[in-house]
Image (cartoon, rainbow, N blue to C red; front, side, top):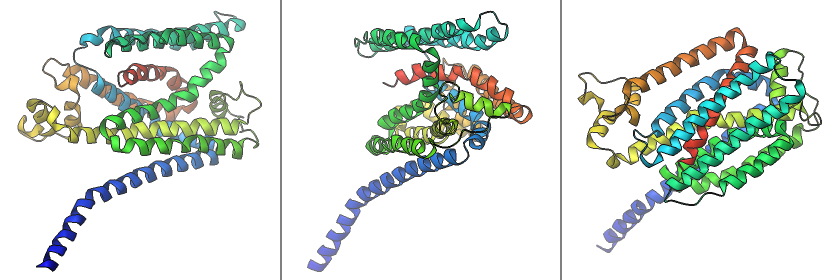
Length: 376
């Protein structure tokens, strides 16, 4: 009897420690994947920066924008309610800033302004961007338990003053800081959906500056990248080779490519996986009819729906009785069409398509700001 009790107690202890062991293994696996992906991205970007830049943008630029579009639709409420002013200011700013930014190359080609006036034009656009962000932060503070976030305006004005000192460098800073916004999105989603992973993720982020310092140390004294053709010249200029002539263009392009690879990885792989886990772990928060429409669409239709349609039904703006299913379907379908067009344009004329893409892509850069603020 005593031996049987010992066996049962040992089995009970083993069963009790199993969830702890599984949690530790999942954390180690999660950390290992993060570190491996970051190191491999840094090695690839340092080894062949120009070639990896071409391949990365060709493969992932369009699809990652589609994933961002679907993500924004997922986060968009059916009715704005108390956030009405916030979203109106957000959409108005996205539209105005995108149109004015796209018009800048057209105005430059028409020679409507002398060359000495372009820093002023660029500084003006950056100022509008900063004031818009300050307004969004203030409105978000009013919506979030009526917090006083009026400090956003002094901070925005202070950044505006720095912008007017060197508008070209301020715009270059946006180029390098924008990919890091995806890491912030991932942090906020982990805090909501996988809080037990959050500390491990933030510890892994400490590796990022070490990798960047290693890339600067390894590539800082190397020769500049060849820019004897139009495509390579565009890539080096986009990374800031003209503004930073004393820094090797190899380290500039490698750093930008490395950050872009992390950006694409978060939007294409990490966030969809975390979002999927949230749907499975919060089924009780979904209304019965909505849960039936998302998880078991076969009951609403005679035949089971394909994965694409089931994914479409998971968008709240589409599945809600007062939503806009046709508009959402059109937007997602048109997004797929644009991805195919972008791939075709890259195949026909990569250099021109790259210029057009990085000009129009300012829209998704601006759209990230309000949706990130809503998660704070």
